[in-house]
Image 1 (cartoon, rainbow, N blue to C red):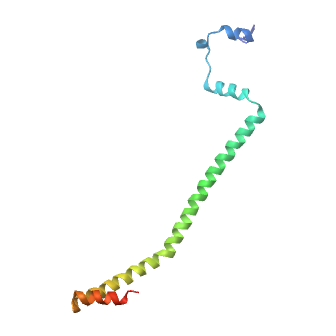
Image 2: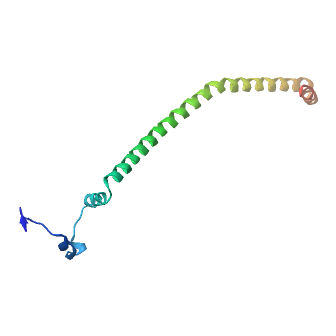
Image 3: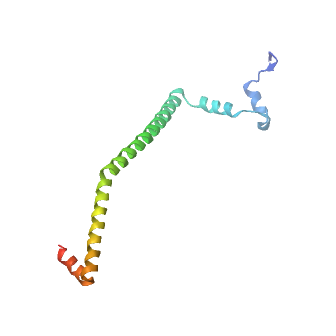
Length: 117
């Protein structure tokens, strides 16, 4: 059986050829696996993988954007409070140091005990 210089091999003749003489590309193997499963199953798996990839990429984009919005909002809202609190603490510390220098160490401690609630 010769057609155009290539010999067509029948079903039983494939069994007589040793496996190491058969040359098959990776693509041919993938196609062979694809033919093993019904079309509806292949399309379902393909659709599921496509949807999974889409949801993962969009989920990561949403997470990245959410982290950016939350972190910048927190900085804008909390930074002035933190700076003002630090400034008040430094001012309070300076007043205590001045009292300690003027009145001695016991006066600063006694005054701090009076102000404590």
